[in-house]
Length: 335
Image (cartoon, rainbow, N blue to C red; front, side):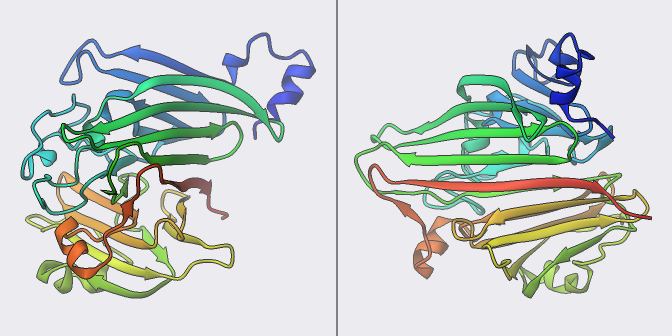
């Protein structure tokens, strides 16, 4: 158990707060991600994260008290891709704890926009890291600005802040998205929260207050019975996607949790449903692709044309903004 950071400081036990919490910026010097920036945040007794400024300020690898939380693909960290036509997005999908899909398209390529849009391939600016004391804990805050601009005058901006703290497994992400262009802009968004081994294994189960689970396609329909308890990796397995009708709690937050008795750990994702009313689950049980994705969103995964036809395409008027929030909490299970 980590004592409150402020008590350590006031008692003279600390000469430098970096001993308990730090945020260090660096540049990768080897491998696929050579030349890309990173922000490594460490907090005693909390969730450590590696933030990727050149990939939309998304969260790459993450650990809770030394236990890996995020699924990392065979691609791993890589630079952003310039040409994202069709399904090129997959070629540089490294996984990570949070991959953001949007801002102009989510899901299938649609209306000239590629799979899952450009957000996770945009380079952030105005990157900042600081530290504060909140409720006797040290909190490391990392923030940045992410702009998606096109040659027709469209301009969507996201101000993102990520927080993690000492003594508690809690990671908070808050986005403020604003339309700075002169015309209304479709602005779908989906947060791809990817959990892998050892948190996700054949003894893990999902807890979602789901009124209904809707399979995306025939593969998902055949595997519908497995969404709660996916089981062990299997050769040749296709990916499966389900949309859940999640019941919010009395304060309007949706919740999905992965509980793993063998790892002695539970990881819960919560999000404000007023802004993110839809929830998708991505499940892959193939060898080397063993992952579950928890995905709050404001859209479907069929692309913006499908949402437009259904009358559900979210549009931001000029000057309009929205705030989206999610929290990822990790905690040990009681014996």
